[in-house]
Length: 108
Image 1 (cartoon, rainbow, N blue to C red):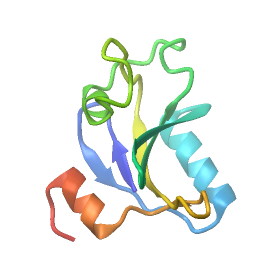
Image 2 (cartoon, rainbow, N blue to C red):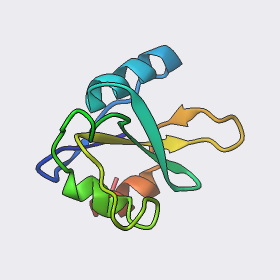
Image 3 (tube, one colour):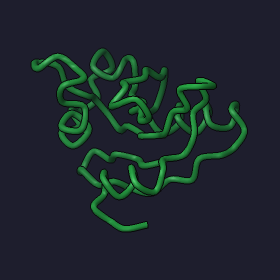
């Protein structure tokens, strides 16, 4: 997974195998209730559902990555985390090496 920090950094984040542990990690990363923003068929950005209501700062990098998936006048507030998604099972999974490289520009 990748955490999208407020300063625009993409930080590698280990995603636990256990679904309950995944939920807790995602919730802790975004700082509250979670909302999924599908970036494509296999990638999801998790954001704080109440980020704007809580006055969290805009996350320019996360907003840029979500372009075309959110309204043009909308933005992502607060820290976000990007994970993989298994369309067959609906499970949250780690990012594939290819998708990780596409997002970060780094080879895995």
